[in-house]
Length: 192
Image 1 (cartoon, one colour):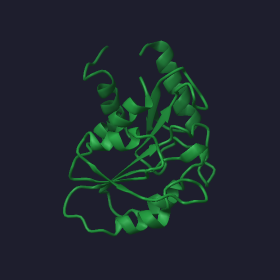
Image 2 (tube, helix red, strand yellow):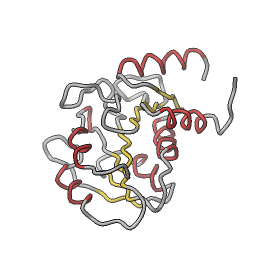
Image 3 (tube, one colour):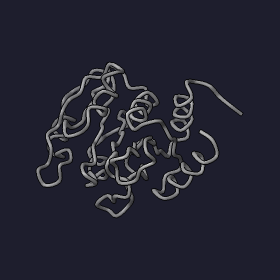
Image 4 (cartoon, helix red, strand yellow):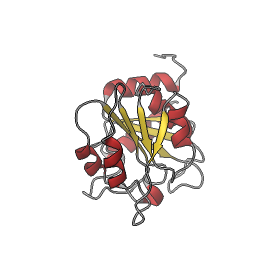
């Protein structure tokens, strides 16, 4: 928190063309906050790939969501779109689809293709972009713009492309999610 953090958030949001960015102590914390902000629960079908750090899956599981794993596309290491398409065909009686694609090794998942697969408002997309700051989607837009997702999570751990020594961030274009993320970051406290 503080003026330097706020300046970093504003600069990052502007760089990736998102409306908002909220910093956290780590990408693990940021992932969990994103899942909480989206009200993920055990009623939701949580779809992701096993080709990631455990924090992606743990964020959903901590809220009761059981993961469905989609194998990777061997050409890019990201979630195989055909596998996702098949998983989305399975009927649901309640809950939403919660999809957490992982941009592997800086290679961006085709988010526009995922967005086209989804029908209706009953889904949430939270991108794990821990390794993808500065990357571009196939359409040329920057990862983190949230043009085809609700939130994107970045990591600034010491081994990442851009580091602050530690830390994570969530970008979003949704004001309600932005306000929830700020509350979650501060343990529910509001400061003037």
